[in-house]
Image (cartoon, rainbow, N blue to C red):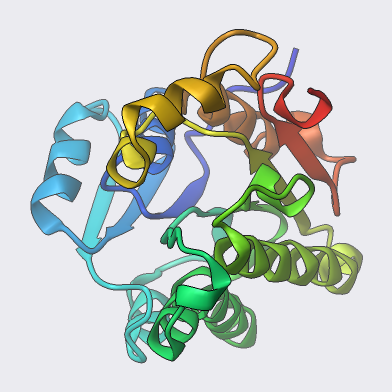
Length: 247
């Protein structure tokens, strides 16, 4: 059984206004963590805050993680180093390579890769990450099992996963753990906005467990990786995909 007492932990979550980020915030608030929640939509962030336990101290920031000033703003509001970081903010672009525009490439790498690198750089330079802290990157199962139309998205998530592994080596001497989750499709309504109903049904047939994931499925694993029960896990890329990658 891993330690579920987070009352002395301060945890930053990006992309906390919905989906995996929102569920992780809710679960960590129940465990007593002090939370810093970041998302572009302030109203949705407030909804997340309202769903969290009233016992959990929460700071919300309606900010775009790609803003140049964002890393410095995070550093400035921290009164003590972070015990946990969940880097969940991201974007999706579905299109064949022949139809991609330069702006698509730039914007997706900006959100999914560059913003995470610069945030981590700023936190490390200012010594805002506690020794023996835990960092969790949310990547994608698409980095190990490609799908048609996702070449650009796959490339950004592959870059993120590689960065996380190198970072794990750099931070290991400080006892700071860095792990990456590779979720399959999580039912947050994103797929329905970019694929037809028929395509969604066809995609579902690739999941041996017979369903898409729920945010709670991923949040459970995030909470474990942020806990003291995972102190000997770092540099891992953990599949959480309902069997999609073995189908």
